[in-house]
Image 1 (spheres, rainbow, N blue to C red):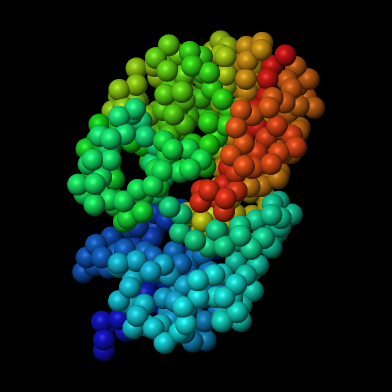
Image 2 (spheres, rainbow, N blue to C red; image 1 turned 45 degrees about the vertical axis):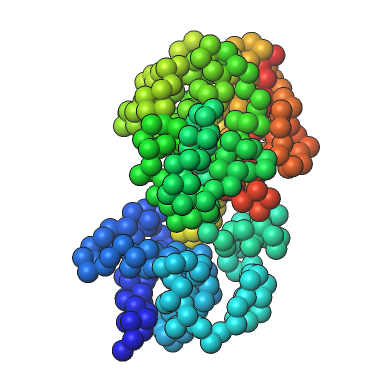
Length: 398
């Protein structure tokens, strides 16, 4: 038995262990990680190979899952053919599916497999975001999400020199030059630049959220749903040393991590609070959501998210937006953001808020990054700039 044939059998064993939960368990990535870590005979390259094959299976689940029952060997071949060509998959793919044609587009893959591209997203989501079913956006959903960095220093040459020494290739975003896409399989957390807080890992779409608002230097902002603080740190850079950012989250451990990251970056204008008080020049409500904007990065969410879950999130988002809007000073800004592409979590939430809060009005965004808008809000779709998906709306208190 060849090495690749043996690897195919291991792949099939792994996916059969995950199969009972991959349409129901939102914690699936952690379980995949534990499953791969439990295989002590795996080296790091083995784990990267099987991780890529498993995530390819989740991306293309309706095309692969039926073969697991009736012809497992074909399921393994389809998964290998659809997997990204990386240094860890190249030899495996050459042996398992080297006799199949190269297909560079989703349409070509669908034609060869006689499969339906639209089946690769849940049918119910077409009512939430029909544009994501168009060819360009659907193709983006099936591509591996890139690693984006945000420069947290004005001395970009210092970061570039280290990356050059490590032979890590990067390219700045044409839309936002301080955002760098990493082109190689690189663990940037092992760099001096990361250790000294000169870079942060943050998706370009996430960076667009605050850049679209036009945050003024010197302002006082509340990040009301800060989490571990990716946007908090970006906000702190934007307001500068004359401004201040207060971060709030219901999870103390997330705020502890945020403070560690702020300290690493040398940002002294960040503080955390268990319960916000007073008013601010601006309030960011980056609300918990269904995460449909992250489906290309977390493909299991396509199959574990339900319309009922979206409705529950929308209820929570309306509550959070109403609660934290009280902390916006007269004339101040209220920014609402999600990493969702769902109409019910985005446009509908803002519209419901405005109906109940006539003291707020829509405010024009400073930048739209090429996305059209009719309501002073943008939905950041993945295909245009190779990002995750986000929505951001800006409101001003009268």
